Image (cartoon, rainbow, N blue to C red):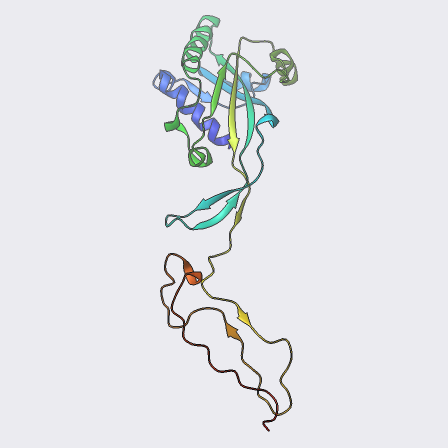
Length: 234
């Protein structure tokens, strides 16, 4: 899920004109060593905090159907997580960095959710809204100064971007539909001199199509055979 959010953000920023201008979009940690190696205008989108939104956690299971409408699996509800990014612009002059940061801000602030056309993988499969908050972070997320201190770099103008994305639930395969009836056998063994009674299958014979109601639906039954009396005949 995280890499799918990354690609959606990359696509959204690319549509703002950054890609056409030759601006590189990376997801590296903007450490001091990384900044020293940078040699081109760059927008850095650094993921530094991941937290679950426990208030949106659901319970139970939902059914997964195939193209024919059959239940093929059961899945727990998705769990929601908040992904917080530190977005910075890097260029040779502060004026150029501010211009880039302004372009990024205008692009992200125009959307309250990641566009559906940019979602892929599990995010596209779930079909849920992936929220997007710009210039803000969660109340419990580390501050920008704490992040810069941990990275060993100097404080720099940045945007806090928070994405609320679902993580697909655990999936368990469902058993195939029942097409054969149960086999019933007597619990007691045969008496001396008697052959064992074969098991009886609880289904209708010579029926290829069980119909919409399955083998439990009403059908014409053949008369039951006369029971054989056990023991010696008088």
